[in-house]
Length: 215
Ligand code: URA
Figure 1 (cartoon, protein in one colour):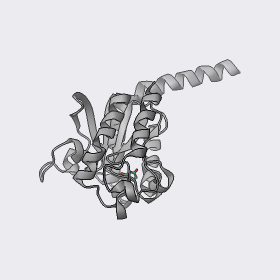
Figure 2 (spheres, protein in one colour; figure 1 turned 135 degrees about the vertical axis):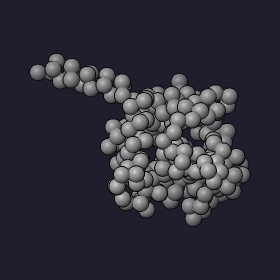
Figure 3 (cartoon, helix red, strand yellow; figure 1 turned 90 degrees about the vertical axis):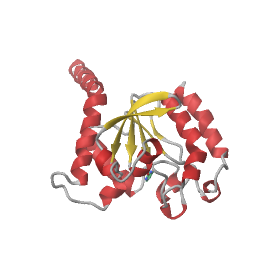
Figure 4 (cartoon, protein in one colour; figure 1 turned 90 degrees about the horizontal axis):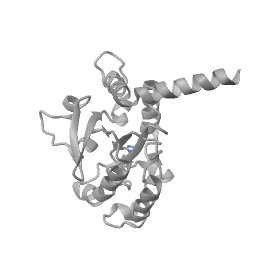
């Protein structure tokens, strides 16, 4: 059912010309992940060059690094997450999407969240954070990451947590305590423990039972 509803939204996005990004895109980048099993929606900034070529979010260098962190935390990109961006088309030179571009795309973002009805939302990076939460010099991503906040989408409240964007981690290699990469590990572990622990336990028990039944 979710798949059918999302397909209607996807077709509208394919035909969308509400902002100038539609003219320069190669592909519209709708989403990734399994809408039927995803408990969490992860929102990034915007498609980059590789995403624009492939039509899938987070498949370039930043996406590959995100995959590594997710795998290490035991979060399944394919089953636990539904991945989207604040805009569906690549901004030229990978610049941050403007407020007008984000506003033009917002109805699609909201519709996707409405259909998925996630248990929680993961805001990946400062652009996704600013789309939903007021920030200022005292409320920066460094201060807000790792905190659970409530955000409202189309009148529905969702718990949301902010994590660093993997592009930022590509420029910060340190694994020292308190470093951005360490904080990313910590934040993903918190997400896993709060929303996905039981699922993987159930899946592990199922796999073990299956293994025993096969001997
Ligand atoms: N960065 C993002 O924020 N989203 C993508 O899909 C790729 C890179």
